Amino acid sequence: MSDESPIKTTSSRIVFQSRWTTLREDEIERPGGLVGSYAVIEKRRAALVIPWDGEWFHLVRQWRYPTASWSIEFPQGTISGPADATVQPEHDEDPETVARTELREELGLSAGKLKHLGAVAFAPGISNQFCDVWFATELEEGETDLEPEEQGLITPWPVTPEEFDAHMADGDITDAATLAAWAMLMRRGALPL
Picture 1 (cartoon, rainbow, N blue to C red):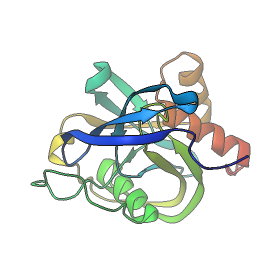
Picture 2: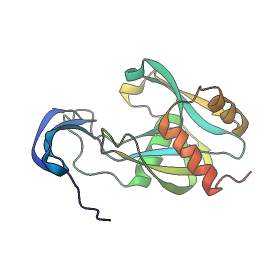
Picture 3: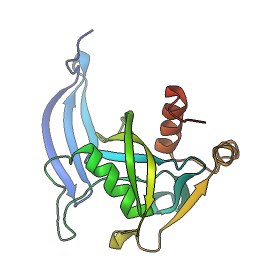
Picture 4: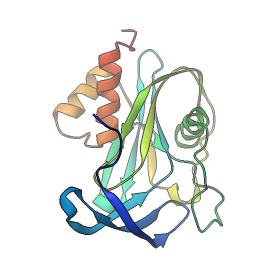
């Protein structure tokens, strides 16, 4: 099986840009000659961190504007460049640097050990963004350093493994990346219970 794209891009234009997101619209030709357009959301590579202190997982409860709801999730995000930037950085940051930054910003934690569990595609039908998943242990507490856009929108949400399972079973945890990261953690047997 070939890794070559079966879809040919005939033209491309930027519809919108910010320091977080680029929306691109491509004119394409599918196999068999069918032409059309495809909108793609471009975002820098992200990191999700599963912080574990031996008793508690440290999640966050975060207001998510697109869904108009609070979301319980593992800390995650990208490094989006300086606050006055009008476009995303040209290149992804080192994945471990992104993980450590998100952990510190959102929870004020630093990890003595980080184990890379793999990567997930956030929404491969509409976006090119991948997210590296990290398991963080040997945690040390410090001060949070939320970005201005996150002030008042993120609070710590520590849970035991049993509470995580209960929140998941009750439908309280709906963030796809968090659920995928949990499955990765369980599959790899990385949790020393």
